[in-house]
Length: 162
Image 1 (cartoon, rainbow, N blue to C red):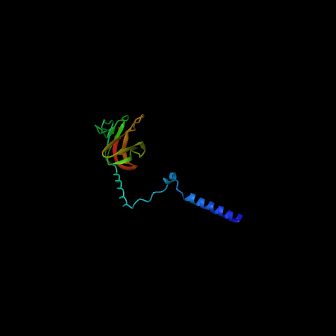
Image 2 (tube, one colour):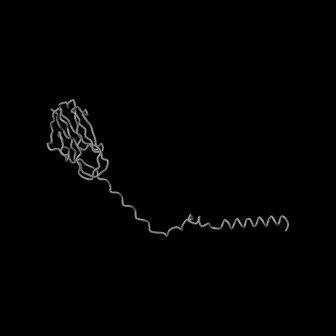
Image 3 (spheres, helix red, strand yellow):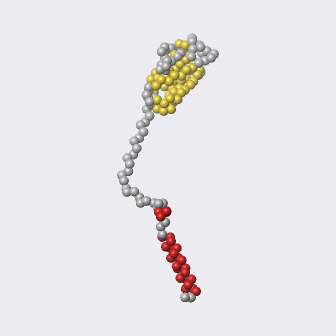
């Protein structure tokens, strides 16, 4: 064999060896092969939509100087003394999460005398109490307790301070 033919024969044998080595499957790599696609199945039914949250509504507002363990006011009042605490008891109904229940005391000239809110999570009837105090005493006159749900006024209750 001439040197050129020998080179061609060696090159061809080398290429054949490489080609066969590339086709040989290594058992350790066989586990990484992709499995055939699963048989076609019927698609899953769509998930049930979450029920819409029921809005929370204010059913009543009661004012007093103290509330019982059940958060209700035993002796509702419409007239307070200057040094009295003013408890705004707000009864609500509905189901929702993170509902802002607010109360604002508005003096006769429209000035805000106090404002507070609480965030509640409820699934039905609930009572929320917001207590206002004034270390200097409330100025005598007419007031309104304005109650809101998520920033929207729901009810107002007039009262006086003597």
